[in-house]
Length: 105
Image (cartoon, rainbow, N blue to C red; front, side):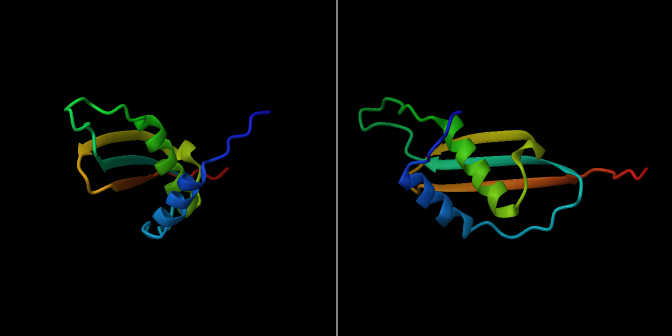
């Protein structure tokens, strides 16, 4: 059994980020696409590129959005990740929802 525990600063970030996520009424059946842009410093002062684990950043952000909106991330069929060299330290995202046909039997 593997237990993953988030660092306190990550938990704090998730709690604060949820305040900026607008509520959304989701259809019964859907798939989603998520575009995320991180505005973060990407270079050291000497000009070398910083090693930034963008996959982890994406996962934490995706989990935060899904937790706030109340759906499992298995509904996300496409992710787009971008990082922009910036000192703003912000995250912008767009979630697109596509309703699927429901069938009754």
